[in-house]
Image (cartoon, rainbow, N blue to C red; front, side, top):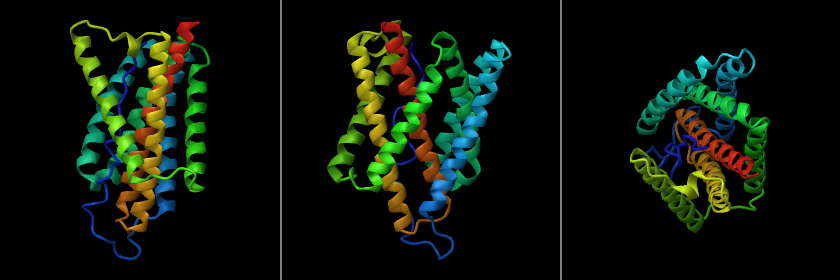
Length: 252
């Protein structure tokens, strides 16, 4: 089942901190702990937002809230993400609304798939946080390092995936399907595995850029911006894992 996915990360990239002052004033600098705290807060807000359409559809049996929740979440989240990406100083004001809107969309999509594939949502959540934890530990222990070659490969692969989804979307307008993306064939499952891997590796770039921003003494509002960027990657990874699990269920 095709799923709406935001491919790549508009929030964090190699130019995120390049245009900022070298060091903010003492007491106004971004810290690693501050970015971590705000990332956790955004995750909580996202889960709270997801609870409404999820509970209404699966518990109360009200399917009428799912469509509007997904539409409002996707459109509103996209607008908020674009504003934050082009104007990072708005992150302290828009990051929380963005998380809530993404929660609405993810809650609705997850509820629909949960009804069709019981247990898929908790599996996707578990895998997403499992990947986050493993990569965070690996990065902290320097088992994985974001070298220039690593960045080039991951950014290039992410761009290729974005282009692939764009082409698929355009072809969809003309009722042309792309089987290796949307079917449940072994090839399609393999493609989804590769895309999940690339999405996961984007987390390493996020960790590195957040750490670099703290070391450079970036302004404090960049804590919110960094948390937003990390959430964008996690949402993408979760959606790709949902897509992969749904293909695996269909192939049985």
